[in-house]
Image (cartoon, rainbow, N blue to C red):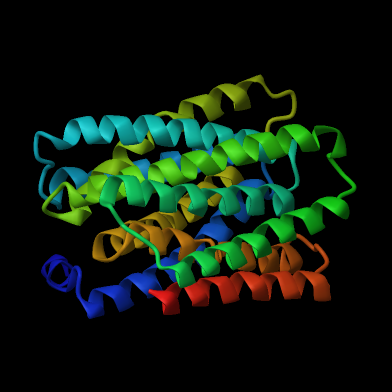
Length: 300
């Protein structure tokens, strides 16, 4: 599979594969976000997820894929630091604000910064049609966040803090997207980057979560929490792996924008599983997000 992926890199077939990988990542990322915001404390869920995917990745990193080249260790260290800050901000935002408000703000801020980062790092450029698509997509995402915010009843006292943290989280989404795209291109085998990244990345949050769990007066049972962690770990492999492969096969900026259709999937998940209402205005805003993504793709 590695040889096939490398053979289509930068080709029309690679562009098509990157498109579908980005859409798959969008859906799975929305599932992942809902999983972290759902039944348990977001910090505990994140710790369980990281512990799961770190342990699952270890045998692949150590015994299956080629070992990283010497220059990759510094890249892994920087990527690890960026992701730790991102995950802490994400968990913090979810404790302060409603999922349907926080998630769209994070995902709406991220692609704008990511497109700028892709221009600075990879010298990628967008056509004016693609910029129009970005504007349409972002208007839908932030419109959805604003609509959800107006109808919000719970956590209004922490709303301003949640929005500020969400914007900062979006900045780190863009930072990890562009830097990880640089990292996966810096090694000969993309699966080397993915396996080692997951093993290294899973080493910190479990300890933070364990400390938080230990101090809780009414700590949740570990069985259901770890089951959620295993499911989240598998979703993380597929979601993060898909978007990283997409950024290697094709443009980083396009993949980052297309992934933000995850906001549409998040709204549907919130409606079905979190029992949040979806009316005609939300449907219209979700259609705007999808239209923006189509314009970005066609405009390229």
